[in-house]
Image (cartoon, rainbow over all chains, first blue to last red; front, side, top):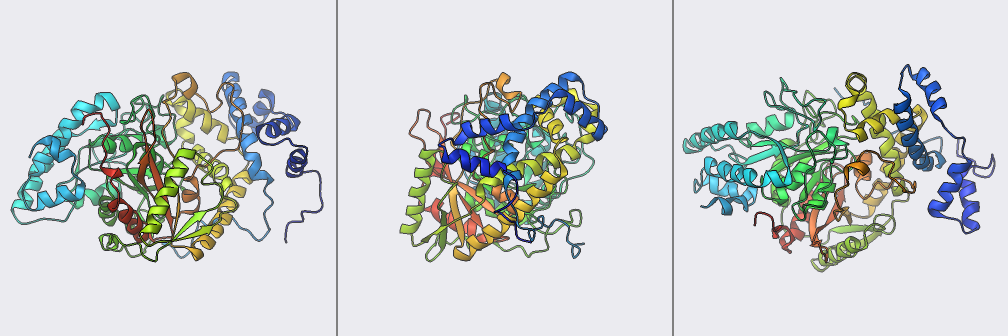
Length: 98
Length: 473
């Protein structure tokens, strides 16, 4: 099914386009969008750790929190990409291989 | 022949001298060991030097050659692998305190093949911890760029780039997950070949990412890279991802002729990096056009996503691979490696799968590129920058930095698509300091021969690869 680009909620991509129209681009636009996103915190990470079956100290959670915020800012461009349903993940398993 | 003369010869030149018995393998090994002893305290390229074993092996090689049992062009040539390749009975540290005392009970396929061809292991090379650390805080300290010791050599095959640029070994082996062969090749001004995924076995190479890891030759000349690849390549029962493709005689591709070869030059992204390097690479492309190549415009619309998507894949797979060590010995990791791997535990599976779908898109786009051209030319990814301070090297989150999308540079797309790529010298910065600049060629899957052909032709028409850093000259 082809991705429908005309409908749906206000995505980050559309917001970026709107900001660009208003002359706000690059790091400034990224900062604005980062502020608008649901924040993560040490508490949310502690809860998520339980899902992972892991236990991190508060000190480690603080490091992970900072690193993850940076990662999430950067990974957003991956999440923003609208991909056609026909595109499958790159094949790794090959049944013809020994 | 004096030691100083020997170390400045290419692998191919040394092979000719060894075959004709104008020099002995012992002479050659001694020359490089002497060079290592002098320079390693300054550049920290080697973690382990296997001097005694190398000399014993050299004596054996000399007896074999004298008895008419010459095995081929690698017979008697010293080489050094990145210390992430398992070497039976020889410490393999992965550049980390976590595995600082590991002595493997098995041999990587690559080193086994090089050893069987008669090459002589002279030591194990420094790297960024587990092929992803800071370098600065990795287990064995930073390697330093021979062109300026205050500058970084790039990574993660940092020691290989440094050892070759400083003439401490004629041949080296690196690994490349996001650019780890090609970036140090670019920053140190040597030849780095990342072959097609599956062309060379990964057996015995400590994993960073199962789906992105490649291993390949790093050398001073293109002919030496061709010589090494011929020996390293081929299927392997130990590695199911090692391809059953026939391995050509790469030396036959080194004709010096590029007439009619179609060189694609991307119109966006790849040339948005360092301006001095981009301008130098365009001059190199002009030179190839003068030599008879045809230049065509190409486009890789989603090239800018290769870095972010590749990072997700590499770190998620790395976190999975290191899960046990990270639980048992977290304090022994480079702080940067620990931060990256612990953060990756929180990446959603959907991000990983989406990154793998982006991989499909990039593979399709590159397939279209190679319908228009035989190779694609882009900057190598330099020049070098100053070594980071330990404080800044501790984390990816730099004080006062702005969060921007990962730039995969010009290299990550090669690992994401599995396509082969080679970096070769094509100039220097105006300076100071004067630092190497390089051009990178991408090719079709399993067509390393064409990459070697164009690189060798350019190298033969220029002298960039013959220039030496001041250190040890």
